[in-house]
Length: 202
Image: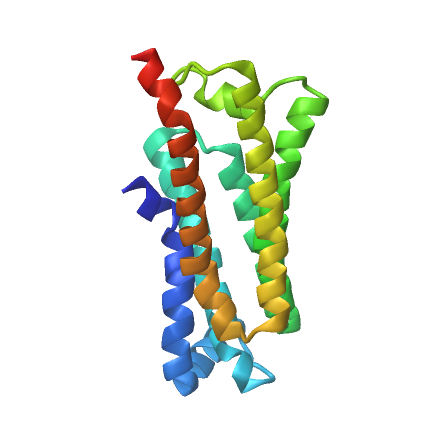
């Protein structure tokens, strides 16, 4: 359930883009009503409508977490800031390049926070998050930290490769299915690596 909740804005982004692709005239009418003007290029209607939806969904997600738990994770705040800033630029300039950069900036921010935590704060952020659940040798914690930095850095680059070398439709598909699939594969690979330490601890 938590995974679905975390993916809620991305799923709505995907669904609204696909709907607008099949109903471009209705998408243009909605955009004209919401933005006060028709999009200059009708072909941009699906991504513009999806951008509006993802901004609203992310704001709603933050409000729900705030009301339900009273505290919002820093990464959720960062995601909100990025989607509002890059989404707004996409809508103002009617240029999908901005929203396509948002996932890369977010991935690189995650990687940068891990590097910053290690070099400046002298802490392993992965160990800080999982240390209470797992007891691992120090070299393994360091391997996990480097693996996550590499994964987030690579995902940022891959997002740009897809965005600039394939159609917007392909990028939207990758944003949901590709990103989720690669994250799942990465987590499963880590689980296999850590399984022997969990068994030893038992």
